[in-house]
Image 1 (cartoon, rainbow, N blue to C red):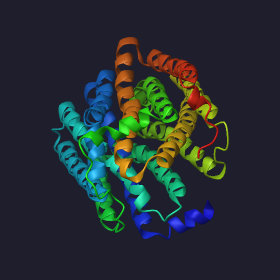
Image 2 (image 1 turned 60 degrees about the vertical axis):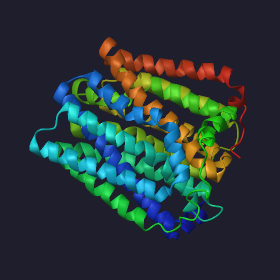
Image 3 (image 1 turned 30 degrees about the horizontal axis):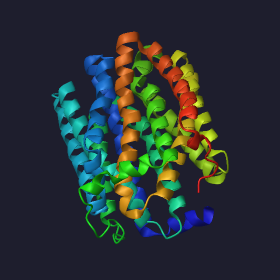
Length: 403
C-alpha cells in the first residue's frame, strides 16, 4: 500500500485529479454549512432546513439516467470542469447577494438547486474519470486515497465554513468561488484522457444499463439499498444547526465542529482500513456497522453535552465509512470501464438519496415531532432496517471477501 501510494503521488494526472477533487469537496462542505446556517437564521424553520436536502436531491433522482449517459458519452474531464465552473458562478451570485443584503431564503433555494444539479453531474463523471488517471494496477490505492481526500475536505470544510461565517456571512461564498475556480484550473492539467469515455456512443437502450447491472448483482443492490434506507432514517446532520443553536447553545464555529465530526470518524476509519483491510466476513461487518451507526444516532439525539455529541458523530462517521468502502469496492471491481458512468450515476443517486432526502425527512419529522424525538426515532429505524436486510439479502450477508 505504501509503495503504491508513493507511485500515485509521482503520477501527475492523479495529482491534479486528487487536488481538484479535494478543492471541490472543500467548497461543497463550506457551502452547505453556510447555507444551512443562513437559512435557519433567516427563517428559524426546521422545515426549511429539510427543504435544502430535498432541493439538492431532486436533480439526481430526476436525471439519473441522463447523468450516467453523459458521463459515458462525453469527455469526463470536460464535464467535471463545466460543473465546477457552474458552481463557481453560483458562489459568486451568493457572495454578491450576501454582501448586498438582498439574499433571501428563496434565492438560496434556487442556488441550492443549481448546485445540486451541477454536483449531480460532477460526482459520477469524476468517479468514472478516476481509473484513467491512476497507473495500471493501482486502482484500489487510488480509490482509497480518493475517499481520504473527500473526508479531509469534509472535516476541514465545515470548520472553515463556520469560522468564515462567524467572521462575515459573505466570506464563505468568496472562499467557495476561489476553491471551485482552482479546481477547474487543476483539472485542465490532466492530460490522460484516452480512457475517459468509450469510443462508441451509448444507445438509448443502454442508458438504463447501470440500473440493470445493479439489479442483477444482489450483493451490490443490497449494499446500496441498505445505505439508502439506513442513512435516510438516520439523517441527523441536517438538524445540526438546531442542535448547535438551541440544544448545545454554541455558535457557527460550534456548528462547524459538529459538521466536521462525522468526517473525522470516516477519515480515521479510512486510514485504518488502508492498513487493515477487510479480510473476511465483509457482509456481516457491513450490517454491524449500520447497527452501530443507528445506536450512535440515538446517543446523539439525547445528548446535551458538546463532547458527547461530537463523539457520537465521530462514531457515526466511522461506521458509515465501512459501508462506503464496501460499496465503492464492489462497484469499481465489478463494473466494465464503458459502463462506469451509468453505474456510478445510480450509485450516486443512492448516496444523494440517503444524505439529501434523509435531510428532508429529518426536517419534516422534526417539524412535526420535535428535534430530539425525530433523531432518536431515525436511529432506532436504522437498526431495524439493518436487521430486516439481513433476512432480505442473504447474498450480501454471505459476502466474505472483497475480490
